[in-house]
Image (cartoon, rainbow, N blue to C red; front, top):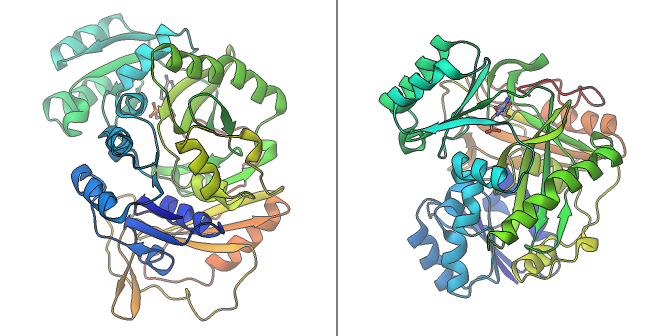
Length: 429
Ligand code: AMP
């Protein structure tokens, strides 16, 4: 079996790592990949934003399966383009990917199917219209840019001045590009946040093991938001009762609603939830796996990932075939100095080779590049040290032991990944 993976981060390295463990996989290409992926797959320099180039690549190499990491190619319609050319692909169609690609589409979908979510005040196409509507809302107010905004499109505003400033930046100065052409207002929900991620072929689905990520840059959830500084997974993160509630009140009407709308969803579906006093409510959908949650989730895979993903692409998922390692997993992200603000690239990375391998530990690459003989940094998030263990403590000890062997100038990482385990998740993390 030949597989094409699209993307270049830690999430895609984790996919390549686990796909490669399948006995049926003989070849993996990754477009464009990174220096760590290049040791396990053939990297092809094709931009994930360039659908035509991805089609050309796949028509030439004829992969038996394509797995898409990031949202952009899915929102651009790669799912339909590949399927119409009989190229098996794991990922939703362009219309289904609108659940992530348009917050307004997602909100209208949720309302149409009576799925619990924050109440919307309205949608706006200009700054004047939006500012006028501010007179009618309660505070805090949630403002969401409609399109893809690389995680910068949502503001929980506490007062009018802050809201006006965001509206001006998004709709007048267009700081978020076309993603900010339309915006919506909705009520602010309070509670703990939880993500529920599942794999579906449109008819059947299987939940993945629960994970929690750490979005703030510094220990104790301090500092600005990042793409994610780490994640962990234990079964205790989700009680059987809560899981049942989420499956009956959110997952069933979501998949049913998609089917009613004539949309057959296939691929990963990430449901961001707020656990409110009235029960779980949907904050957002993502049409793909998260990064770094994927690293923690896939570390616990105890099944043939290539086989299961092929079954999903062929619309014959057997949910029983997903088996997970008991215990826990963790991913600690090592970032460049300055990240998530400005950072320098090209710092040589030491401690990746020539060491005794640690059982249960895998160093996944995100922003790395090979320059001659050495590996250097090439992004904000550089590495994701991932470990599995019988308990969360075991996994943490292993991961941090490996983290401490790695060095590059300016590197930083959180020392409290998984420390919140068993405690309530605070908002914003
Ligand atoms: P989203 O991309 O829609 O999940 O929004 C990003 C983050 O904004 C979420 O993870 C929440 O922390 C916050 N958020 C989004 N919608 C709401 C809401 N209605 N009430 C409170 N917080 C929200």
